[in-house]
Image (cartoon, each protein chain N blue to C red):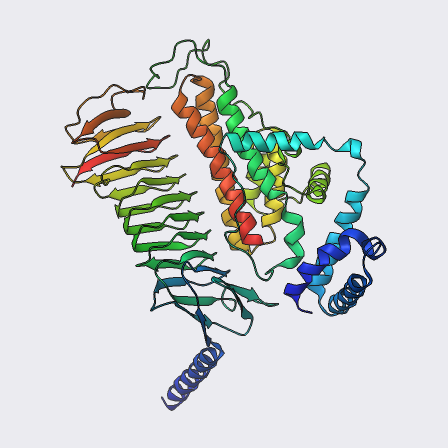
Length: 282
Length: 283
């Protein structure tokens, strides 16, 4: 058995545990499963990468089983969120654009699913900011310069972005083990960034959830080469600065639809950054 | 004197030995596949460049140059679908893990290329193209009738002579250069990068260029036929065209936006920036 074969059998074998998986199946199928299981075990003994992958998956599976049904939102919540994202054109059906044949860094594969829903969450957050701002009373023309009148500019400091909880923004397509792992990640602090840029991002003002997501992002990219890590940190810092700058302007000029669209665009840039990082590390 | 000569000779020999060793470590592999119509080809490498050109007939030729034995090439064919991926082994780094790919493919193939750091180059094809890479330098030339999707983090993107397809470009800080790019839909967005367009905006397409703080510059012929809208929230806008005024919901502020048409207004052109400068210039 080769590394690329492991993925095909690992999920099925680990999902049910052998005693459950074999129950009620035909004898031929049982023999086939047992053979695959023994081949897998032999491979896992000789391949540390796949062995670690198997251990990760087994842990996630076991943790997921311990989830009480009441702790998880009903499935209609995920379905509704996904439907809204589709309706707004913010997500589309996943297409197999670039299948990966063999993992280049298999041990990290299972721990990165949270990035995809976080990226989707960023887009949702941007959409929320753009669409839930109070509509201006009179706003056909936008002032050429930022308004500084205290009556119309209640907050000189960029207001925190009302990001929804990441878990709540997780679409239905995200498997339960990943959601469980995401919840675990939210409940425990991520590793601190090592560079000054990372520290600056981590210390930047903003919503708690946003900071937590940035911490997770920095924690993940910290596995990359130092130069790549510094680049991602720098780009994240720049994108966050763009978001803050645009948010501050929108706060002062809530009737400027174009500025609100730019705020949405800035969130999409951040989502793009997350997606690119996810692709890089997978 | 003699001592210096001896030292130079030793250094030279050592250098030659090292270079020849490095050369020997480089491996060239060639893969050939026969496909029917509408081949779908994916190439994914962590480090290294990928170039694709039209080949002959229904044959796909992939030449992979591996920089060391710390990396392997995984490849498989399932009917018309071909998947190629670099497989880093333990200890591989940006130098030793590099694989450069050269592809000769049927011109109508659907192509997906991904490289984290190398150049992605495509020319003279007319299938759908997806090119992605954080730092990849993307170069697409002489492509028509296919959709072109490009995504980078900070890698610059250059498209030249791209016609009659949907073009969608997204970058975080990479510059975007579009020369003679036309089609029913041309979208480019970048955060801090710049967008340069040199062309005539075709005859009936929708062109949308967006930056956050990067500049946008469009160089167009005087007989261009388009409906222009440009707005920079905090930056300046400028044009030297005799635009015909047009009523629009688009906010018009002198120095920060303009709206108007030229010719028959065949194409729609929207230029948007938050704080970058926008310039529309006659060629």
